[in-house]
Amino acid sequence: MEQRINWSDLSFGYMKTDYNIRCYHRNGSWGELELSSSESINIHISSTCLHYGQEAFEGLKAFRGKDDRIRIFRPIENARRMQSSARGVMMAELPEEKFMEAVEKVVKLNERFIPPYGSGASLYIRPLLLGLGALIGVKPADEFVFLVFVTPVGPYFKTGFKPAPVCIMHGFDRAAPLGTGSIKVGGNYAASLVAGAKAHDAGYVSVLYLDPKEKLYIDECGPANFFGIRDNTYITPSSSSILPSITNDSLIRLAGDMGLKVERRPIPLTELSSFEEAAGCGTAAVISPISRIDDLDENRSYVYSSDGHPGPVCEKLYRKLLSIQTGDAEDPYGWVHILP
Ligand SMILES: *Cc1c(COP(=O)(O)O)cnc(C)c1O
Image 1 (tube, rainbow, N blue to C red):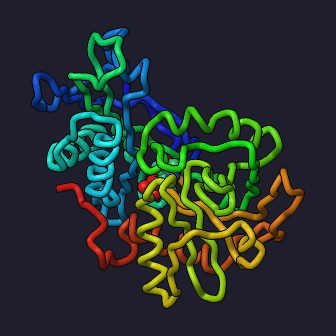
Image 2 (image 1 turned 90 degrees about the horizontal axis):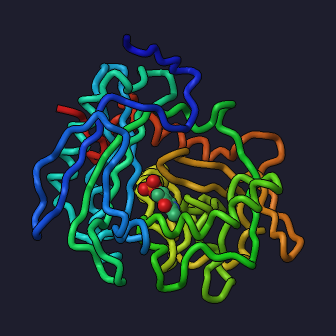
Image 3 (image 1 turned 120 degrees about the vertical axis):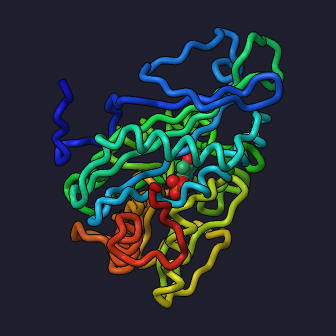
């Protein structure tokens, strides 16, 4: 019996789908893509991913358009970023073509889980790369598995596109100045759980991290990049400890198209008071507008929205990017990969 999915009731959580795909790297080369219906993997208890965090992941989305075609947003960028993460923690790099083939295949095989056009929901795609093998000394694995699974997810903003508060806590970093902040590895997330839980308990959706070296500049906004808007300018941090977000890269181009100036440079903490709008950005939410930033150590607040509505630039960028992803707007940069 096929389960009926209530598309309007989906959360941003996990739901079992029909298939996932695995591909093993053994004896120096990648094998064939293998189809599986199991939600488990059988790996050695000594695997480096388990002990030493030798792993990386990605996150991207597929959308069903009005024309019923399936669109995946910029998957080649995820393939490349996963290669960069692999280099960063000494894992085998998966060729771009193999990544693309696996993503296309897993989406197609789980087509019945792709939410309908107009539901606001999408199919979240989660690629993983893990170090395997019977090793206990600290060294890179000699075997790896790449796997991709999918799960339908509801719109990130269940109650509409609304700003939410974030906080600054000077006593926490998510990554070291020249550490792994610029690659997408699970360790960065483990390192941010305590600060994240503290922030949530205090009513904030995210932690806005300061640069881990001098604590003078804005760094990462939880699991998202940060940007601010001022004087018709899109301003986003450059830092060696933030992840190169594909959403941010896309917004930067769209902002330019809309006639905004773009600045990518260190943003001093003291500049927060001058922004007209502020937000986080990433695949999950596209844009998470910030209503208020509370600096919990300096007892200062920066308010960007107090009426429950995002600023006009955030709103415009959000609508534009979303409409490109779903195929409602033209795709001038060839970002959208339509399933063959
Ligand atoms: C994945 C991620 C982002 C967002 O990247 P996108 O490519 O836009 O999804 C931002 N920051 C961190 C720390 C991330 O892990």
